[in-house]
Length: 308
Ligand code: MTE
Image (cartoon, rainbow, N blue to C red):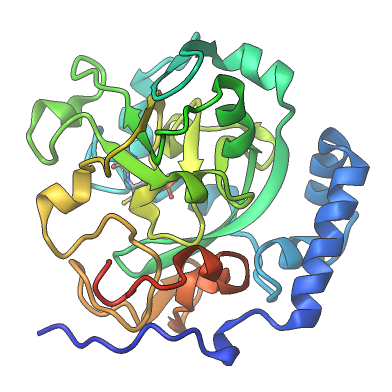
């Protein structure tokens, strides 16, 4: 039986103001530094404390390259997390294009290399919380999704953005089985898609994104369960109606919103605690994965108990 509690945002769950202001200052600082310089400085540890601020104001330490690249959910290859990295070697993600279409003034096919010359990647250290109960802190390199979407001028009818992963059973062996409805599909509201925390990641620790993490480009929505952060994207559609996405088709206990919520159980049972990879003891899961002060306003008036 599911135990549900009111979705109130408690003061204790909101990042302390000082940490929040600190993070805002840090973001400005990072912007001033310039994307390339910041990536280098952060990886070399020249900016002490910056990583913690970027991860949400706490003393979150990034997970290691090894942890992030050897424990992966990517059902197109396998449902065995430890097997994904080896199976994914089969894919050469170059060249790669993304088709952007639907409710837009100017549909476009974007080449990823050209995109990265136009929009320089920035480092963003963000928490990832999987609905299976594990979490990591990941130093992504990427560009804000909003910057990509502005290139195509959405029409006034565009209310949702739908993302589609690569469908290629010849190379993605897991797609030869009906483990999930293929291709893997995810979607956001326009407001979520335009939020500055929503990232199109193209790298990790200053290196190109490994195949198992969604090369060459994947979504990162840090306040939602990890399944929203769709990998190896080939198409983006702007739509008027709420799209059908992969996981709610598998079970009614997975919702469209999938905001991290420790008070509400879902398809994988209680979500109150999590196992940070590399740590011995479980942690309390935070509402919106600790990003409430940045994103709670997006859901004002929405019953988070009902709209999973
Ligand atoms: N994207 C695609 N295309 N296929 C997948 O199976 N798994 C999701 C998400 N994106 C998945 C996907 C899930 S359940 C999680 S938790 C994250 O990717 C895991 O990302 P990581 O392997 O980079 O940690």
